[in-house]
Image (cartoon, rainbow, N blue to C red; front, side, top):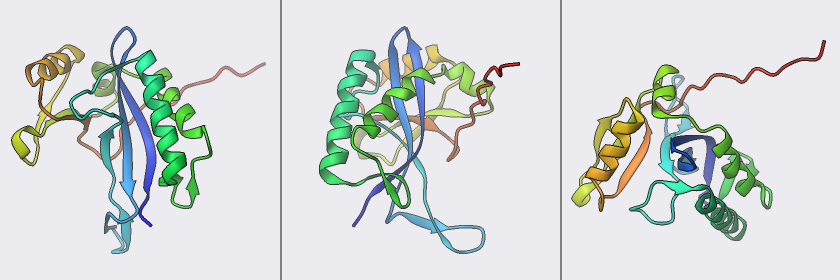
Length: 170
């Protein structure tokens, strides 16, 4: 049985209440060779979306999207949190919505050492990558390519974000 493993979520914050939900995902059948020569899952960035031409979602649309993906995960049983652990009922929706609380702008991702990109799949092409440095540039590129199938993600397999520091009681 083929299943998808969701490793991380990195949401882009475009403007007040508008998000692009990106996830680092792998398929159980998509493997590559690791450093020791053993097969390891190939990670790639994908956008959670129901319409291939829509990337940005409001908070209300994110709630609907999360419910649709949670229902799909429950019906198909193909959404996994790790290699051996599927998402529990309603856990996937909560996981998606939690990504909105940790959303960053393009400038913040760049300051963390990441390389955000916009990939254009126009006319069946394999995908043309455009590196973006600012949120305004990302919005402008998306508007200039409206009607194209786009993907927002990162050049690297993993995206770095700082660990949140929590206050400790003294």
